[in-house]
Each structure stands twice: as structure tokens, then as C-alpha cells.
Image 1 (cartoon, rainbow, N blue to C red):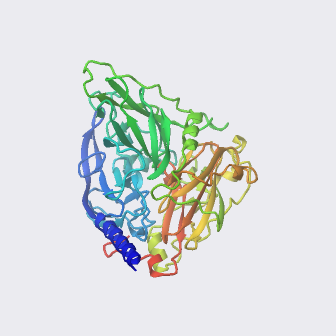
Image 2: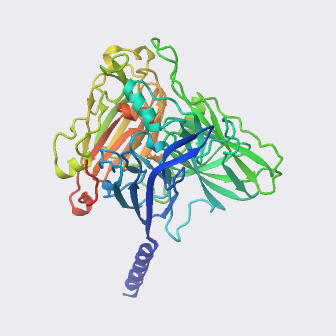
Image 3: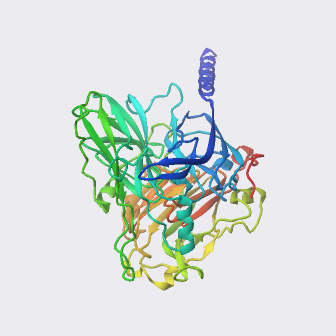
Length: 569
């Protein structure tokens, strides 16, 4: 009896501690025009609370986050909390016309959700048009009070947000591309924490500086907030130890270069263990697109500039010339692939979820480019993008989540195929301009999943209009990355390479250029969850679909009603 009372007391104490450690964290976002100078002229941008990047939100696992968004900009707006599971709070996820209608100019909406079963570095950004070029910020989820990191406690934690900058109104950039049917203009600069660094015109005094003390260790929370580019990141003469990706802890991995796709986050420990001095940190593009198809004059353009900041040791002489790291070539796919495939999950660590072994849904999904008919465009066609030859088109009258909850028909169709309509030599450049494969129909096609179903998906890159690495992002879930490789996926031999013990857990995977990746997840969160390419150059062209996860058997596993202030279309 005494033992039973003791165990009950311990359980109640643990429950009380858990409840006490959860807090309500409340913020207000005022989204409006801001005039800033980054290069040689002033530019009006859309920003949150007058800063670029926007505010860093800091919470603990178990907290409830409430953000009141006041849209004082001239554009429709939503905010997406990138990587947050949104367990039974799909109404707060944010993608435009998927989970909500946009907040109109002059309107407001309150996002409210719990941060459950995850900790690490995530971020938030606009999910309407190119606005996320300037409407973004870090979201840091620390462990509950009294719960340590699974690595030595750092001296300091520092968000490092990598972004892109245009000397133009980014909404106009996107509108021009959509009108012409061509890709949008490339950016004019990359940025580190909103600053371009000293390698651009008129930017010598606009460089991020990180001050460190010799002998201390720093946790850098690296976020790729760029719209259209994967990035290499290095710090001269320093190694970094990867300890988490996409808010999932990893086996420590020592590297001198970090590679990130748009939307991905990487947490690294930086030991200030070099001679007292100044060292450049730098980021430049990993542009993976292969040679142009025979009918095309050149590979697609990309921003081939370099942004840099400085790591300055305490006591370093001000006259010292900083050391510059040797950056990888823009097309260094071996370095990128090594980084992406060398990371493994911290099995048994905080919030670790073992790989599900029973598979209910097998999917083989091609991702790539194509064309759609456009009578008003220059050549009668426009660039299009597709998954299994379906090019996603957002609904206009009602969000998909509202249609799911209220059982409204004709907003989306439950017919996204498990396999491509035509089998072909997917990565052979000979098919790059095959007219029978290029035209992609527009649709709002989704895949419907039973609650708690386990999905395994092979993501196969294609050579249509050229091969390219595609960062694919899943809302509402993390997935295990079982394997990645080049060429066409081999269903006989490639499963032998699967890591079923400690694969990395992510919300965004870079499908290798001219290759494939295999992911697996359990659909245990009812709602409508967007699955799309996080290159904004491709998202407007339709490289997306959605998973509709049906309600579970109980009220605790079913989507609750929408908030009363949900914006209407």
C-alpha cells in the first residue's frame, strides 16, 4: 500500500511539474510597409513589427503560443508556423486557401496553438505569394523547464537566418512572372540576419557580426529563409557539430559546411577554439540544376553572389583582416549529398519516434517541371510544375480545410494518384522536352488518408525541362528519411539501403538532383496538410498537393470547429 501511495505521489508530482512548466506566450504582429536600405537605394518592403527579419519567438515545449496578426499591409496575408505539428489545431497552420482564407488588408486574425512533442529550431513566414521574402522570423522551442538538451549546454544561442533580397517589390516580381509564364527574376543579394554583407555595392556597413569568447561554445540555429535557393554555409577555420535538423535531434555530426534547402533548419554547436581574431561566415548558392535540355540555350539563371558576416573573438584587433572560408562550387552536388545523407536521428532522444514498420499506403510520386497552356503568354505556354503530372491549383471560394470540416464538395477532388500516369525513364535528359510528357493539367487534387495510416512515399525527380533538386515540405508532420540516391529508384535493390533504426526526422527533404528520396510518416493528425516544393519559383506553378487526414474514432482525435475569427474569402 505504501509503495502504491509513493508511486501515485510521484506521478502526481510529475504531472504537476509538467503542467506548471507550460505557459501561455502571447505576441502581436503588426504587418505593414517598411522602408529600408540594403544596397544602393531605399526599398519599401512588407515586414512585421518594423524589423527585418521579424521578431524571434521563444517558447518551451508544452507552451501555448498566441499571435495576434494585424494586417496593415496592402496585400492579402497568412502566416505559416513552419514545422509546427499543429496537433488538432490545423486552423492555425496558415497556408493560403489550404487551411484558411487570407487575412485581407485591414483585417486581423489570432493564431493559437500548443507546441507539443517537439523542440528545437523552427520558423514562421508569410504563406501568400513572395511575401515571405521579408515576412519571416525564427521560432525557438526550448525543452520544458528542468529538461536538459541532449548535448552540452551552450554559452549562448544565436539564430542565423539566411535570406534573399530583391531591389524590387517582390509581389511585382511574382506577378510579372505569372503574367509572362517565365520564371521570376533572380534575387540581387543573399542576407544573414537581414544584412547582405560587404561584397555587394553600397553594403560595406551592412554586415552581421557575431561576437564570441575564446573557449566558449555557441548554438547556432541556422534557418534557410531564402525563397528560391539552397545554400552552403561556412565559417572560416571552424568546424560545426550538427545536433538537430528541422527541430529533430541528431547524432552529433562534425562538418565544415552546412547545406540547407529553403525551409530547412540546422542546429550546430560552434566551438570558439581558434586563434583570437576575426573570421568570415559566408553563404552562397547550391544551384543543382543540370545542363540545359537540347532545345534550351542555357541552364536557368540563379543568384551566384555571396553574403557574409563576421565572427569576432573578444579581444581581436580591429585592424585585423578577417579570414574568408573556401566556399564550395555552386554545383558541388557531392558535398551537398554527403551532408544530407550523413545525418542520422538521435534514437531514444527527446521526442524520438521509432520508424513505423507496418505500411498502409505506398506512393510513388514524380516531382518536376512541365508546361501548361497559356493563350496570353509569350509562347502560348507557361512554366508549370507537377506531382504525378497533377499541377496544383488553389481553390478560390473556400479553404480546403473548411471544405473538409463542413463536407463541402467541389472544392478539391480526392483523386491524387499513388503512381504517375505514365512510366518512363524519369531522369534521362532525352525526355527533357518530350511533348507527350510536358503538358500538366491543373487541378486541386488531394490524397485522402485514414486516421493513423502509415504512408511510405518515393519522391522521384524527373528530367523534364532539366533536372533539379526539389526541397519538399510536409505540413503537420515530421517524416523519417529512409534513403536518398541518384537516378531512377530501384524498387528491388534500393529498399536494402533503408535506415529503419535511426533515420533523420525532417519536415523538408531535398530530393536529390536527378534522383530520389524515400520518406515514411504516420497520419495521426486530422485535417488538410499541404505538401509542396519550398522553392517559391515553383510553388506558384503547382508543385504541390495535400493530404486530407480523416478524423479519428474519438473527439480527442477529431478536428475541432474553426475559430470564430477565421477569415472569410
